[in-house]
Image (cartoon, rainbow, N blue to C red; front, side, top):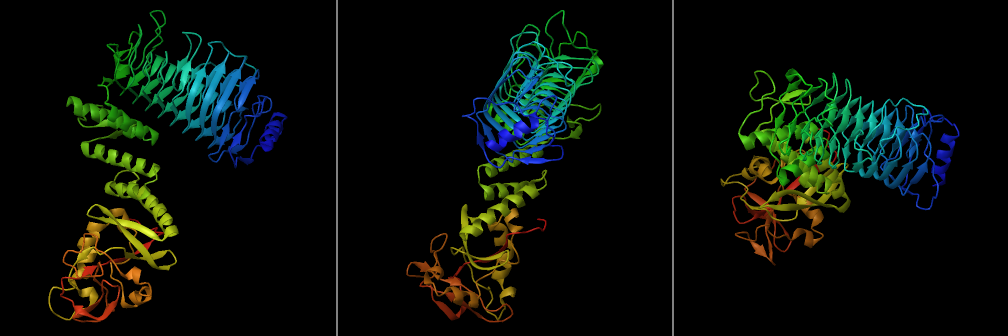
Length: 594
């Protein structure tokens, strides 16, 4: 705590942290701090690199009459990343910009989250930034953002307009991959109010808003030359995407799934009233909207028809479809989410959206032409489900599911990474669950280790097989059982991802290995995964094969009895009443491609 207070005081007294990296190495709770200042001001900005490392600042309370108010007041070329601010209360009297993370951003805010209240009596207010002239990426906001509709005391900085937004009050930079859950409101009905930004004169891409408000689902005012691309709004709003769209502005590939209502409301772009139709030939294309209650998609009084291209009204999604779409956004898969919404409508209405003059089966998604057919959609769903399993801690299940769609996006890399993490956990316990038979996981125990390679013995007898069908001399690697273990059973037992970590063949325990572990009879005694069936039994356990040396030709093969004893003399290799207890070698660190 003292280090934070010293850091804040140093910045505010003019010390430059330009080129420095400041790291937060623990969570901090400010509940006992009655007075806190923002870190940095217009005259003494924060210029360094602040790494939160995923830690949390909790119970910050700031009430200030500074020009820029936030946990950080004014940043200049700074980078703030991986910082979580929770249960924060920010209040400004006359600021130009008030933001949950920073009042003024001219560098970058990356992978941050804010939860709490931002209240401004003047100027711009946002959950991450008040005024953004830099870049905000992969951030989220929840709580409440309250603006006023009164311009702030412009005591410096470059804010040309003001607004209230879930992510930033006004945007003259870039905002990408951000999600707003916060309630956003203002004191005035005629003020720039948006789910992502109140006023936009920059670039907003791949963002989502889940809040209801009497403004634009993404922005209120999309100014000259400003761009909104690939954004989604789920809240009930006055305008699905923007209230006003100005000359040379662009809105494309956006989706509104909330209800829009009001006298001059619209599913994509509306305007406030007959005397204030702020739509001056901005380009609007490839947008989708549901739930407009008879309102137009675009209030087009000032639009030339050539500026409106392929915008469609769609059906309301089901709860399951909405959940699936939301999961895509949470994974930052905005292109796929757009394709999912369009393909779902295709299937429901049995029509094809055309987004090029001659392409009958193409869907444009954020600048690229992509055909989202049923197979691609199914791969999407599997990909999302795999990600959910991994987030829930089911690393193995998620990895194996990724393995079923290896040709989709980065599934191969994700599957390998997840399964490698799973194996690392297994090495700590010495117990491995790899493969399935009859729908049940196969349990293995480690019998030896060489660096990152683990030789594993199956914990149950899996099959009843003879070594070789013909009564003849044969070596192990020329036997029928060896060939079957490494073809049919290998494919049957192990998923594609799991097979990528198998080193060498599926094997049997060697005589030497059997003698080593025979000192513990309980490790040798084994039951069958599917019950004894036709397998020889003794003391409630079953008989299972072990093998001779690879090149030795023989008509007999050793085995282990139900009592855990080794029979070196063995039995004819054509015997059909002895089970198979496989051995595999797993390479935990595998850099080879699948």
